Image 1 (tube, rainbow over the protein chains, first blue to last red):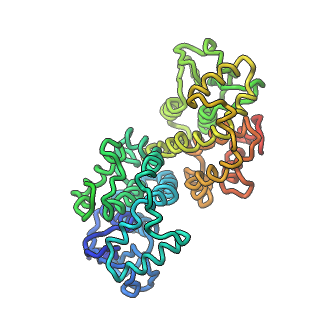
Image 2: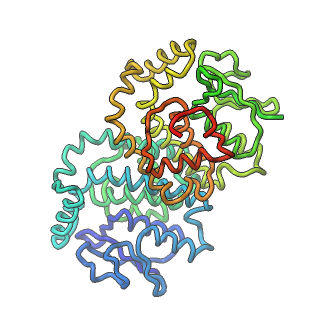
Image 3: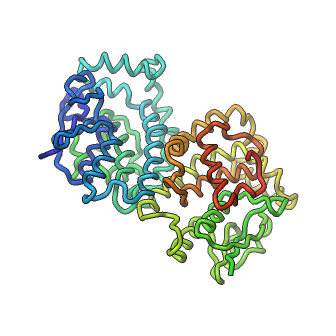
Length: 232
Length: 232
C-alpha cells in the first residue's frame, strides 16, 4: 500500500511549496517508495491524522503516523534499511546535520527576504489572513511587503552567501558526492520552495548552484521539475 | 621514521598558528603517526624541501614530499588506510568538502577581521614587512589596522555567522558525530589559528562552539591545548 503524505499546497492543489515537505518527498523517492500525496492548506489543521501536530509534512505508513521532516527521514532510513541509504554511514548522518543547520540558519532565512510575499500571493484567500498575521508576527511586526523590499539590491549578498554550496557543487556533482542523498534534498527543498512560488531569478544561469539545482530537478524522472513552479 | 612536517611559526619557534598546518597536524595525530615538526617562517621559502611550492604545510614521509593540507589528508588516508579514517565513507568525504568550503568562505574570512593585526604582532621582524605588504595587497590596499578596526562592533555578526556550527555541536559532540574526524579538524584549524595568535575573546564562555573547541583542544592528550596560545 502506498504511503500517504500530507503536503502543503497553494491555491492550486498541485502547487507544492513547503521546503520541509520537499525534503520528505525526495527522501521517499530516494527510497523508491510509492506515495500518495494529499494537498493540505495552512488553515486545515483539523484535517491531519492523529496524533495531530498541526503541521506538515506528515506521513502515514501502514497505520503509523510520522511528523516532521527529520523524523520522517530517520523513520524511512530505519524502516527501509534495505533500500538506498539517505545517510550513507554514521559520519554522513552527522555531517548532514551541519548541512541542514546551514540550510535553516543561512539559506532559508535568506530566502524569506525574497519569496515571502510571493507565498502570500499563491495561497488561497482562506490562508492569506492566517499567513500574513503569523508571518508578520514572526518577523517582528514587519509587513510581508517590507520583508521583501529592495530584494534586487540584496541579491548580490544572498548569492555570496551560497559560496559554501557553490564551491562544493562546482567540484563534485552532489553534496553527497557522485550521487545525491539526504543532504542534497535538504538544500534542494529550500530552492524548490522558492521555485514553486516565485518567479524572482535567484540564481544566475551560469551559477554552479543553478547547474546543481538542474541535476536535482532531473532526479527520479524529473519529479521536482514537473511540479508547478518558475525559473526552469 | 617520523614524518617531518614544516609548520608555520611565530617569532617564538613553538607558536604555531597556520590554520592549514593545524589541519595537517590534527590529521597526523588522528592517524596516530609520529611527527617531527620544523618551525618555518614566511620568508624562509628556500628552506622548504623540493619540489618547493613556497608554502606550508609540507610533509616528508619516507622521502615523499606532499604539499597542501587537502592533499596531505588525502595522502594520509590512502597511505595509512588501515588506521582510523579521516573520512569514514565516500559520503563523509564529499560532505566534508562542504564543511571545508564553509570554513574557507565564511569562518576564515570572518576571522581575518579580528586577528590579522595580531598575526603581524606575533611574527619576527624579518616576516613583518613581507606580511604587511602581501596581506594589505590581498585586502585591496586596506591597512592591517583598518581590517581589524571596530572588531568589537562586528563581534555579534561574527558570532551569528557561526550558527550552523553552533547548532550542530550543541546536539552532537563533534561535526563527525560521536568522534572527531577531518571535518572537525578543518573547522578547528581556523579557531586554533585565532587562539594561537590573538587574545581577543571570539567566543562567549557559554557558547556551545566554545565547549566543542574545548573538546578539540583536549584531543590526543591536549596536543593543541599545549601549543602556545590565548583564551584557554
